[in-house]
Image 1 (cartoon, rainbow, N blue to C red):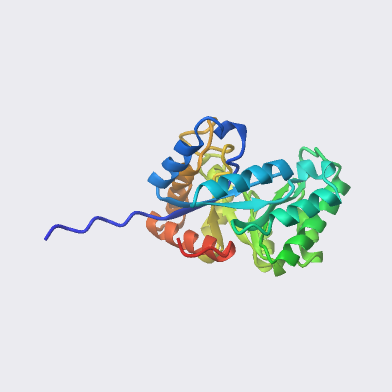
Image 2: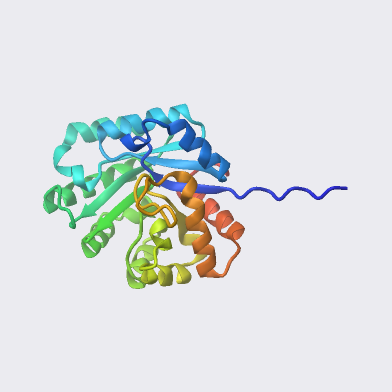
Length: 266
């Protein structure tokens, strides 16, 4: 009797921006390559009302794509109460599984910090009202992010710290609030020693994988367009760091993503 073929790994890319212009010319091929690489599900993340509408359209067109809607801190100053009300309506769509990408970015400060914090708090409240997990962006604003999350009891919604780049102490604070930690392709960079140390020590049930496509392509594609298929490269490095087989990392991170985003088992 011939040997049974090894079952293909199942991975989930928990953060990709499929609506961006970089994917306009070949989105069907990008999604097919992801499937071929074992990526069963892609969480497509919006950043402003127009982006969110397009993200939902993409999710409607592809069974393995789900949408995340919200206002990125860069766009906080351009969005008011009426736009947030519109997003609340969009978020009731069956394929919307989380609210995000929300948070604080004091590195670029494209919106004033006080406006960022106001919109952040408002959106945490909306996510809790809608019973959606949150997808958190934090750059050069760690303590302010943690303070907002704690004061607004964002842990009641749950969710994920997107593209984590902090130290072990910061990771522990997020874990204490009940958040998962999402690992991007940056983990493949030679300079990412601190992040590798954090990943080695994380509880298995707290780890998610993401690409943040089209940004932050992992080695050997660094500097080029990122895409969801490349999440397997991040999985391989995480497995190496933790002394596990890549199939183990794929299985646990997929289970974690299904739990965080309330997905059926893929």
